[in-house]
Image (tube, rainbow, N blue to C red; front, side):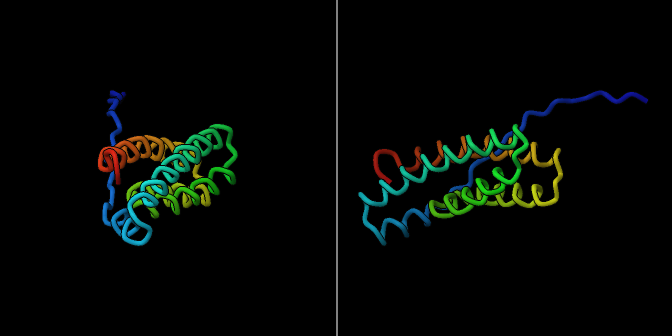
Length: 127
């Protein structure tokens, strides 16, 4: 029996905990909070790109370290789902599950794009 392959587009939705940014704003003020969120967005973007390259080059120790950095950065600004997927990536790297590593890394990149755009939309001109 030959099965038919069905391609399903993968789609993830961002989950942003806006209260994390609100707490940060209360602690450091609006201007500094905006600066910190912007810096963290750049940090996440950089780590995602490096993590994706590390996975493609099969440098899994580097990818794991970058995913750990993503967990902290995402948690800091309320990107909960992204933090959870980065945690999943560290776990499958520890198991050396190559197919899962590729799949979860790709999911993390897709989710990262949506999460960062969502955060920017929520923030508007300020935070």
